[in-house]
Image (cartoon, rainbow, N blue to C red; front, side, top):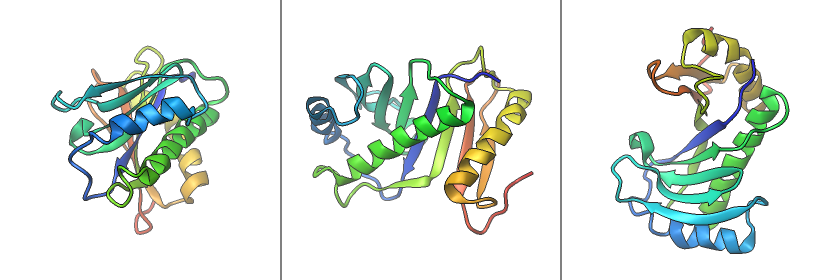
Amino acid sequence: MEVQHINIKIFAREPAPADLAGAIPVFHRWIQQDATGELLIDVADYRHVPEGPGVMLIAHEAHYSLGPTGGRLGLLYNRRTPATGSTREKLEQAYSAALAACRRLEQEPEFRGSLAFDEGDVEVIFNDRALTPNTDETFEALRGELEAFFASRWGQGTFVLEKTGEPRERLTVRVRRSPETALRA
């Protein structure tokens, strides 16, 4: 199955900062310092939008946003341009980019000590309804790739996959690492 535009949201640990204004100067610094190695373009502030994306770093390949979308603070890596490689390689690229941004944010002076991300609490969003419609059949077709990817990261049997949402929404899979849980069949 061909997949493109994989998004990864890594959730923040609680308590998380309520005021995200500090992300604005951080993202501007990232542009000036070429922090991600990709073409970074601008910063957009959507904190005023309820359940909106928060503060966004606009880039050519992908957008990064730090916000409370879905009611919980997290960093979303939103891949915009097509990626090359297998599904596994695309998952690796998106997850690695999101995790690197999370770790960078945790070390920024504006957030040091007040923001931490849980790399074991993730949403994988397939942002192309034509290629990956939100159906049980699509989820089952991708399940093996997702299980193999997260098993390589966290270990076999240490996480749970859960398809969320309804057919009109993008295919979203919640992945939570837990040493006490076995992998759902």
